[in-house]
Image (cartoon, rainbow, N blue to C red; front, side):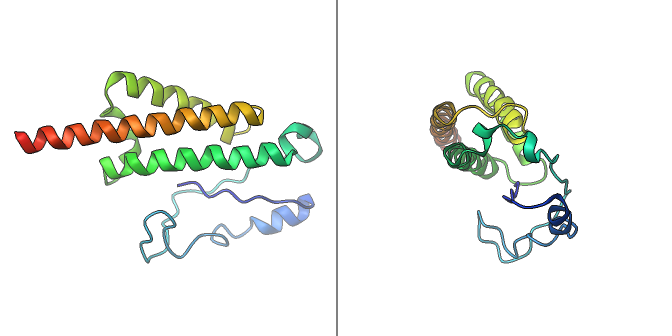
Length: 155
């Protein structure tokens, strides 16, 4: 699970904010509500873009669309995690998808990676469309899981 922290301020105050990697770590899982602290598997700070950030990426509409897009992605990850619990569950779960769903998952994952790493932030209307595509994929995945469970019960 990624934890994103919006921040506005000077470069110096940003450095102070991220100096403690545990500062914003939740004491429980916000997805499953498990009552133990999350295990950190790494921490990295984002590249500072400050004034170089294009105005459209600082736009409140873009920020809201990014939040909605990432919420849809987290919901998809939650379904994948339920399908394959344990270490490397997202990677393994994506391998169990039937080819059309796996291809769509891989396409959307590449777009998501470009977005969260700041390589390509689409305009709000494109982010909304991508969020809808993720929701459609999540629903198709849930249907696939349901069919797999039914076929296992019959066997």
